Length: 380
Image (cartoon, rainbow, N blue to C red; front, top):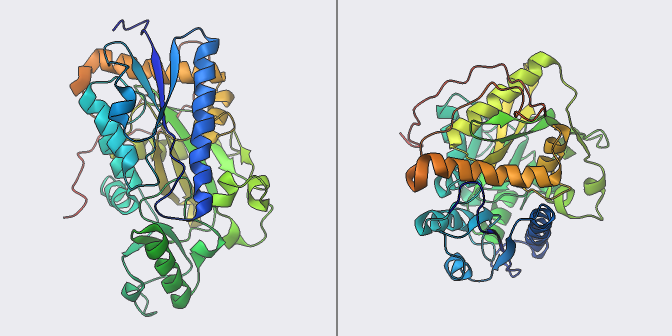
């Protein structure tokens, strides 16, 4: 395949709309992937690239059979079939095994980020602060109020993204409420529940991309419409239910209104999180600002939503990129990386201190030195 002019781009995404677990409304997140795939495909068409929109109905191997890796690169939007656990990672592993050049992170990084408890342990081992958390497989594992847990807590399924399973009832203030929420997560989502200390403070989204990695303008969620500080969360409704109050009252401010020192600190922590998880291509790091300006990473999202109304494109727009620029750049990053490292280049990314992308568009100066650290085992 030519490095500069690939014969074709396959925009890969999952097209299954029946769920084996969770709430019926969770299918809205999958429908969002359909819309994103359509937008990405149209963007490549507008710039004159050969492109095919490729839904995966059953398995990625069959879907890609007519598109050999010598002739096609994959723009990977795959997130899995029927809500099955870790399907997003499996799709990336399959693409790796089949020899495709594809966008975004590899399967190992995706698996590390999707399992929230393991991600927390890995981040902490690399010096990145996250809220204290506890993993419960059954409500009977919740200890009596004895000082072990500090309320309020926010309870999430341990291996979901897109705010699936997160609503107003996810924030709990009592042992009884915690037990009920753990039971809900275990029974409805068929996985353990992660309970984290609720960080009452500002929430920032940090978009990162490139090789070497660079930070796009920071974004902040505006929760000013919520008087109750414990209602200030990015719930499922806020992301996906267009008729909800939450959806219309959680606007995003980008660039975020922060001073230069805090901006650099936030960007530096985001870069540390990227390195710890081993992200590639593009990612988003979500964090909360707690007491005494302490920063806590609450999520590392490999391959975040690239829809025209999503946060990643908002940050790219603030840096001077059009939608076409964004998707072409993401694809070019994947192609350049494969050209430099081949199919077996899995070494860690490194941070960059560049202030522009070479085309006159500004990128955030993070200012904080990021040290490479050996990854430690999740369990010791």
